[in-house]
Length: 287
Image (tube, rainbow, N blue to C red):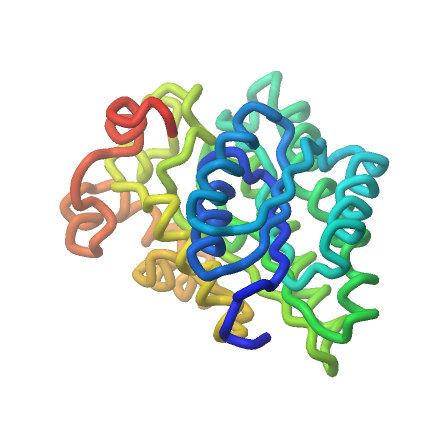
């Protein structure tokens, strides 16, 4: 994909808040034309207004990505308005915290699969033929560090993020040989409201003192991933140590995960530099 995003059509799901909002505004600053999708019409309208203030042309379509009919209407509306889609950012999703022994665990897995995986599949299957007809385009799938290494009490989320990683890797190989690129983003804990309802004591131990990434950090990584055709991006970079350890041996991965429960070690690795997740959310209630 050309490094210049001027007039490129970028479709972002889950665009009404958090990472999706930040991604939309990051592409707006790059001169892109936006198609924004999310369930909340009111929040979507606010992001549309922000993007227009940055000079972007915007189409907002309230969409439940778990509905195939709604996704078809979204893509049809984008094509009717702009005639093409250059970048798809699959960001819509949810997250649940809880032990595997919890009575709610099975339902948590189902809900997260529906919103974060099957929604992604729905949108991708509808957009991919458009990219193939054009002969070019980019798909960015939002996973997590837990798409490569699971943590305790985050089993339902990790299961789905691993599935997103596998889906992205398979898709990338299926479109190889053309000019369609596939990127998967693996952020560590990020300051969004994804886990706002979880009590601090319910969080996986390493996350209780970890300083979250900002949505803007992740959004910049998405733009760079498309511009530089990166297949996989892990944020922050120091998280690659955990994933490398896990690749070498689950025992090594577990040792590193346990070490991250100790704030001094997390601080040395640059992952505990200030406010915790809950402190950040409390100080920014609009996240």
